Image (cartoon, rainbow, N blue to C red):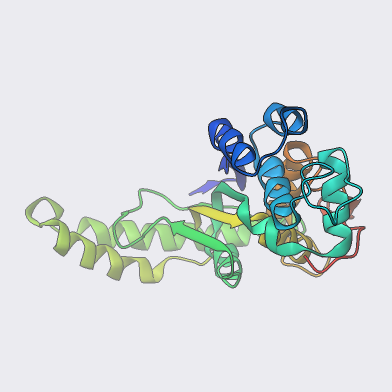
Amino acid sequence: MKLTRPVVILLAETQVDPNGVRQLLQELEVSEEGAKRFLDAPPNAESLIELAGRLCYESFEIGLNPNVSKIRGTNREYLENILLKGDGSILEHGVTNWAFLNVSRVLTHELVRHRVGVAISQESLRYVRLKEIKMWLPDELSEEQKEAMIHAARRSEEAYLRLAETIPWAKMNMDAKKRMTSALRRILPDGLATNIIWSANHRTLRWVIEMRTDPSAEVEIRLLFDQVGQVCKRTWPNLYQDFERTPLPDGTGSWKATLRSKV
């Protein structure tokens, strides 16, 4: 039995193709001067979201759409206005991809309740036969309580391993192994550490960060999404410019959007 801690890794994000941006602007007859800022912009989700929004109104430059007499000159200004107005649909174009490692099935049962705008791939205990139990324990537990939980987890681990030793794995094909591995997992605790790949668009991500770092949220998922919020603030400072963190007594933080929109 091994104590562990949740780990957050940003694996990937939507990137724009500079050649595609150039072709888009040419087809829309944006001038060379007007196109320069978009061609020089970082090829990330913030740029993609701005492109999507400006396409709706042909607001890449003055004169392209006769109805447009003023445009916001920077990505930060543009996204600030989007967040303020609540034009959340264009935030769905940018997708983030995360690895959440050593998280419990308590956490993943909470996480899968968020279904819109997400994709999930989780470690399968039908296929993965464990060699040991890994688990994270909340800091709010007393030392005596932690020892009691560790003892219970070790007993479950010992029972699991004893059962596994009675099975002739070497003589079984994969289908038979899968069925037996699935049967054995039924005695494992929900606190068992597992791994999951979780993808979400930025509209969904903003919502989940707020909901899952609320002071009333379950402590482990709050710990996890506090880390996610910090990564988002660093990686997409314009898109999360309105997010502010309030430290909580247990060392985690609660994130809230200060531009009260509907995104």
